[in-house]
Length: 192
Ligand SMILES: *[C@@H]1O[C@H](CO)[C@@H](O)[C@H](O)[C@H]1NC(C)=O
Ligand SMILES: *[C@@H]1O[C@H](CO)[C@@H](O)[C@H](O)[C@H]1NC(C)=O
Image (cartoon, rainbow, N blue to C red; front, side, top):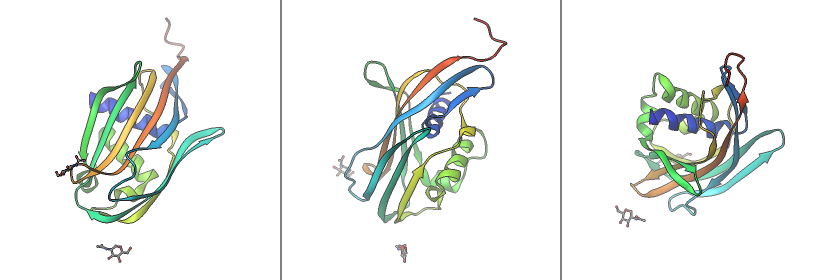
């Protein structure tokens, strides 16, 4: 259940600005306000640039380029979700997953498969077999609206991603600020 929620929110962060109607039930909009690269400067990698790119009539994008000179056989993906009450509070989920294992054995079903497929579509260079590194990753991140999650609570969120090696060295970190707004009930079958 919690995993399902975090994956939905991961998807939200990927979806940016796309108004979504979910199976005729509710409609809501997802808006990424900004992407921020965090924990800089990195000890074992060089961030050439990290740009938040707001666009008129299109979702906000992140454009980044990072050089990772070393090779790694183990890299941990950490995902933490924060929900804004008066300040951002940890909200339900912290995920730590072994990135190389995820790449070696792609999930075959469910939301994890969806996440894998989305990464494959939008940033396939992240899914090359381990060891990872010894290269520059240049990524413009923007995804398709068909990946929309079904339902998520309204509010302001901060989603934090980190790629960590040697248990505490951040190779790359990013925060995504987004808001989710209900825009009304669109189904004629629902009355309130
Ligand atoms: C790093 O990449 C270069 C080419 O981009 C290659 O020649 C070299 O062998 C690689 N180093 C390692 C340790 O894999
Ligand atoms: C990271 O871990 C190493 C060894 O486990 C330790 O010596 C070092 O102090 C740690 N650094 C931080 C910033 O926690």
